[in-house]
Length: 193
Image (cartoon, rainbow, N blue to C red; front, side, top):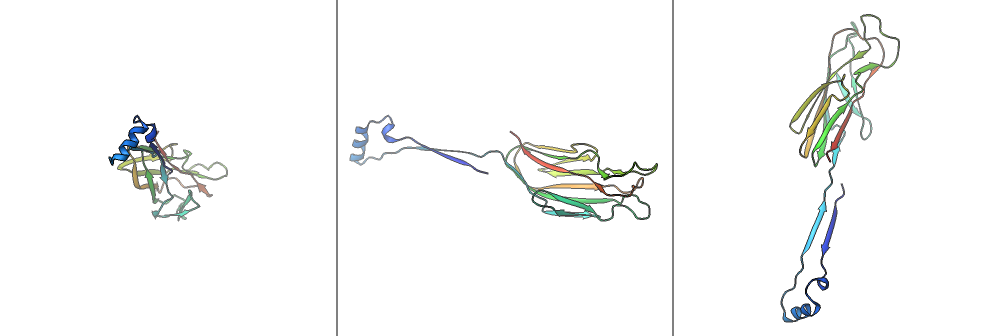
C-alpha cells in the first residue's frame, strides 16, 4: 500500500504581510511563523494470504504457489462399499483489510465431480456435495457446494486476523463410481468503495 504525503506551505512573501513588514519584524527580534498543513490518503486495501495453518480429518492441505493450494482426501471412499468417507479440513487464512469489505467463497455449483466417464449406473453417483463454513471478523456464514456463492460475508469495518474456512465432506450414501474427483473453491476478499 502506498500512501502519498502532500505538504502545503504558504510562502511568507506571498502572504498578506508585505515584505517591509517582514523585514521590520525580523529586525526587531519578534518571531515570525507559518503553518504547514499535512494531508495523506490511505486507500482501501485488503490482503488475503495463503492458509497459514490447516487441521483436518481424512484430509490434508498443501500450498501450490503464492495464491493456490490443494486439499487431498486421504481415503475418499471406503474400499469395501465405495461409499464416500467423511472428511473435514479447517484452513486459517491470514487477512488484513483496512475498510469495510466483503468475503466470498465461490464454487462451480457441482461439489466434487468425477473428471470423465460414462453416466453412472443406477444406484451409483458421480458427484459429491460438501458443506462450507467461514468465521471472520466476529461473523459466521455457512453454505453448500451446490450454491455458486455459498459464503458471502460483509463486514462494516476494517479487520485483521485469521479467517477460518472449514470444508466438510459427508460420508455414506450411494456409492461413487470409480474415477478422479475434483472441485474448486475461490476465496475472495474485496474492499468496499
